[in-house]
Structures are given as structure tokens and as C-alpha cells.
Length: 181
Image (tube, rainbow, N blue to C red; front, side):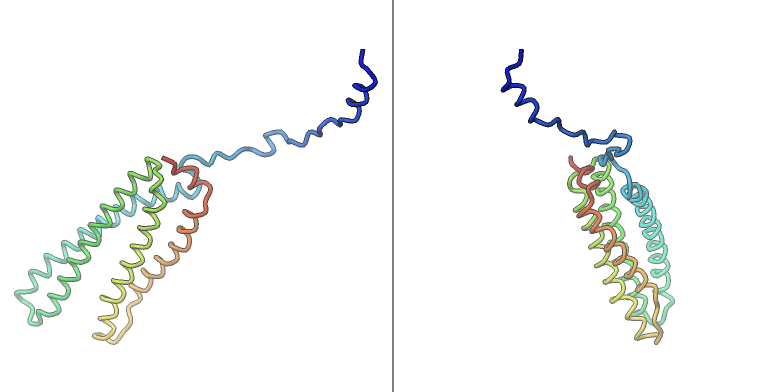
């Protein structure tokens, strides 16, 4: 039998209220793995490599045309400037391809280095766009007297993508849960 003290203790202790809803109302999101916006990046990485390979082939074709023009062109200064632009572009594209391959390997291994590599890629793209814009496009403004928006649009798209992707990689719970190895 219960003593009066035990009955009093049992009656003063209220039963905890059940506040937890069934799991079907609040499904747990699995943030590990490549999902969400990272799927877009998984698609873009190989496409960027293909894009830079096409750029590399285009540069090699233009370079071979420039070599042929040197013998027939009366103003070799423009041809030499064009060839130096092409060789700089070639090395920039080649380094970018190697960097993208390294980034893809880290991305699919879900390495902790992936967010830093991707942010570095975006910053590198920004400085590459700046270099192209100021060294190439602005030279033609002075020579031809008109403004070409090609370099400016490249620079703008690089800045916009950096404003989107850098905060995502720094603040996203999915990124922190995915790249843990």
C-alpha cells in the first residue's frame, strides 16, 4: 500500500505534456550528400571543363592563324600583341582546366577543401575577368573608338555568380553537412 506521503508526491508531480508531433508533419531533412543547389554545381563543373576545352582549341586555332599572318601582315605589332594575348589566354585556360579537375575530384570525394576551392575558383575568375577587361577590351576602346560590352558582361556575370555562390558556400547547412571528409 502507498503511504500518504507517496500519494501526495505522485499527485503533485504533473505528467509531462506530449508536444512532439508525429514525424510525418515535420520530416527530417537529410542535408548530407549532393542535393539542392549542389546538384546545379555537379552539372556545371563538367560543363565548365568542356567550355574551357573549347576555348583552348579556339585559342590554338587563332594562334596558328596568327603565325601565318606574321609573314603577310605589314603591321607586325598588332599580330605580336594578338599572339601574346592568345598565349596568355592559353595558359589561363589550361590552369583553369587543371583547377576544375582538382575541384571535381574534391567535390565528389566530399572533401572539406571543396568550399575553399570553389570560392578560390570564383575569385580567380573575377581577377581573370578583370585582366581580360582591362588589358584587352580597353585597348580596343582607344584604337577603334567604340566600346565592346563583351568583357563587361563577362565581368558582370562573374561578380553576380560570386555574390550568389560565395555566401551559399559559407553559410549553407547542406554544404557544411556534405563536405566533411
